[in-house]
Length: 527
Image 1: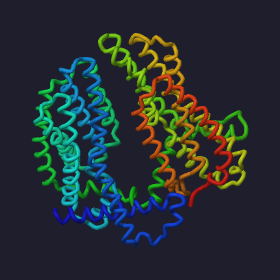
Image 2: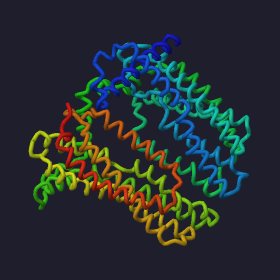
Image 3: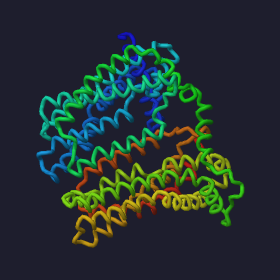
Image 4: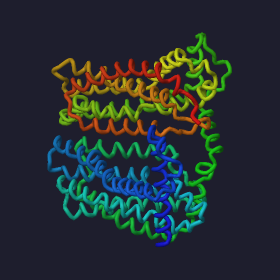
């Protein structure tokens, strides 16, 4: 296993270093001064290796810090202020336990389809069991080391016994190992099909666990702290049994052949064809669909009608989930009057958090990808389609449609939060209601404009519908980071709401100017 550990480290290092160099070469200006021989440069590989160490260190500690602080510690503290500090430790442990179970489903990393793992197991024919045990052992060590300081500090501040804070990281690792053992056993029992993340029941389970993480705490009925601690201890012990089961397991290679499918990693042509077929399955084949509109409006109307399932299905699902959650909060406020002071803070102080939420709910990237695959991929071969006035006209039409799609859940959230504010005692300032009703849809409009604008200005896809623009990826990453750090803002509600409204209006105008000026040169199929 030590040999497998060494080979894993070499492969992962080489792959990540080359990926960093490739990413640097995709950035404008920088790519012009970096030669192709860069991949042979020892000095730059050392530099990229340093970046890799920093990235890995950040993965070990930073993500876990953010997870513990923002998903566990802050909610537990806020809820304890509502119900009394005596139950602070119980709230902390309750939330952490249920979120850990969710993590076992969604953030397990046992069979991640990463290229360096494909090279190791499929191409280099490494022993699949040794590779898996070595890879996952390193992951578990990083998991425990990364969580340990933050569970000790946060748990102690929450009032949990100090000894239990040491146990928590091992319990977190144990839950993942138990889940792995169960999935491996099911695979052997059912003789195949390890495609666990695509099953609808998994996401339903995760959704129910997410509700179980916070709603009982808001209602003041968390699992008692000592019971949660015992469950973490049992998970740690069960994790040892799960790891022993993993060591003796003998079907890793068939699983890798399924999860590291060559058509997904090595055969680009098949991957592109599969992606296209998945999108085509959502397109209406009804030849009677037509439109009474003319010109670009006719083209857009046909696209929207034929892609109604692709464009609107996710929006309806998101809207339904938002409606249910808001109704749950309103119900709690109605039947648990003591919770109103806490719930009232959600609409009054939650606009920065709503920015982050609207970032995730917005479907701009998926819509622009569909636009390219089923429309622009062909139309960009005609020069008339790339004329300045035509580009701006089509941009405005599409912007209107994307706003219509994304604004539905935003309006539901705005109305729901306004109703929640009224149920929780209301606000003495009528402007609070107006700000809520307008600012949330404006945040949605901002992201709709943003994604369509960078699509037109950077057009990241090549003829094979693969994303080939490092700048586009960089901007979307910066957007995510900006939304995340906005959650740390403590602007007054009126100020933040006014900023979002004005920013959205200005961004619409600026986007039209940028598209008109630069899109004729940038809106093209990439090589």
